[in-house]
Image (cartoon, rainbow, N blue to C red; front, side, top):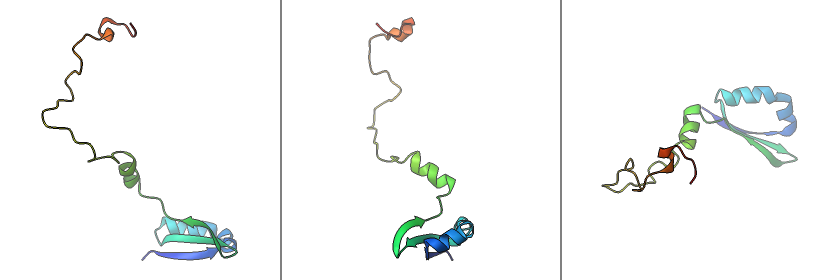
Amino acid sequence: MARSETISATEFKAKCLDILDRINRRELERVVVTKRSRVVAVLIPPEDEAAQVRRVHGFMRGTVVIPAGIDLTEPTIDEPLFAEQGKLHR
């Protein structure tokens, strides 16, 4: 079971690579590093890649409602566009 640990900065410096490996293996869920009894860092494992993608892409999923009868592919203006004539500007 993953657990938390609090260690001094001196101990972290001496065991840094081992601590990072343990976090990576999910043996530790959190490591609090202190210096003179004050918290200076908190180490946690990164989210898995799928969770990161879900958080970034689609974070507003479910917050937009499109009313019935609205066709998002339908043109919004009736006048011709200049781009149809190969022009970028008027």
